[in-house]
Image (cartoon, rainbow, N blue to C red; front, side, top):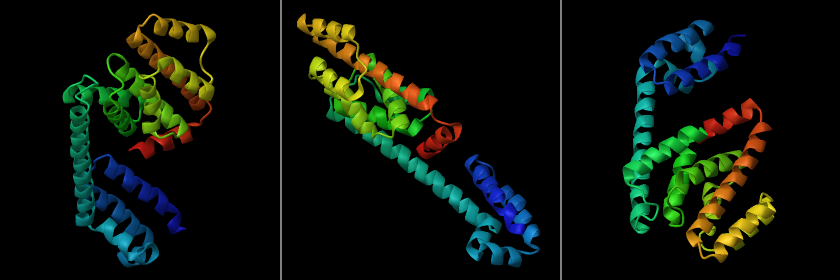
Length: 239
């Protein structure tokens, strides 16, 4: 019977640590409760395993875990900044963003999609492609992030679909329409007319916008069919 309460308490411990609560207070509260449940520290250790129990009853172990997690997060942040700067330099900043504006846009995309880590990957892929720029960047990053999250597709491959439109907007969009079936006849004709008039930039921008519209529509249908649990698990995986 005592073991029945353990999963809930372990969940509480993980939740409190993730929320930034003081590990010493967590130790006093949860470690003490587990000790009381089993009658003694020895009884708890025997039931749960000495390694687990020592971690719960030793504040230094908890503190080390928190410090280690913070250090890892800092390392990831520094590495991400280096990757961004490298991408901007190697593409001669084709995307047209400063490092600061890049970070702000990445944060905005993360908030809009609810997937901050995936949004950062999308922004980096866009910057590295040297095929996407201007007013389409944030829209494409947001659509790509949501679409990749909903479908499970690799974010680099999703962004690559947008990048392919920069070289041959009409032909590349036709290939993608064969895959996704999202274009109307009128949209295809309007795009072809822009290309015929020599308005290459406008044709690329329109093609990328049409793909984003198609991705958004598919994403919405997929998400509508998912339960709250599936959506919650997907967000946890992104952290």
